[in-house]
Image 1 (tube, rainbow, N blue to C red):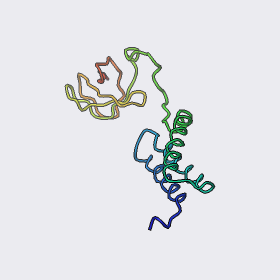
Image 2 (cartoon, rainbow, N blue to C red):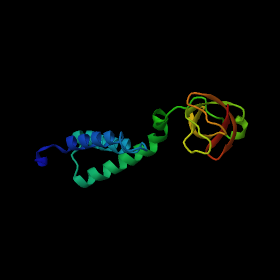
Image 3 (cartoon, helix red, strand yellow):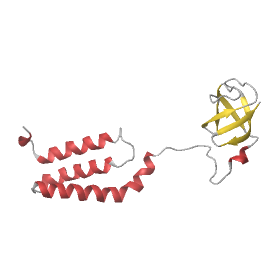
Image 4 (cartoon, one colour):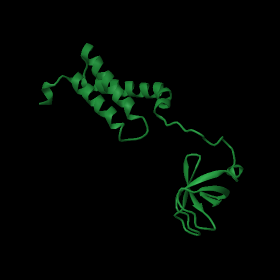
Length: 149
């Protein structure tokens, strides 16, 4: 059955399939291999070459597109962060700033959480604090914020 399908169509459909797999696999690499397959299929419309040459052409086009465009295109697919902490700013500089409790904080319990600058942090306090309360950061121990009312 596949012997009746022209190879250029096989390459193009394969390329689109590989590019669609990028939705499920992180890393932004499969797109370029899909692009290599589509370009190989498009070149086969004009050139009649053997299977081995097609495979080499696919590999070369994929690697060239990966090396050439990945750095440029990656900026379009990364998230944007707002209100981000400046680089090299110690967390101790945030002592006294406000955060919002997102999960009830119970003293000496690992379940409390606060949101600080758009990021969720584990939180601890000397007293019970309910969700939605605005708190003040006292200090930080690793990934846990010590807070007070």
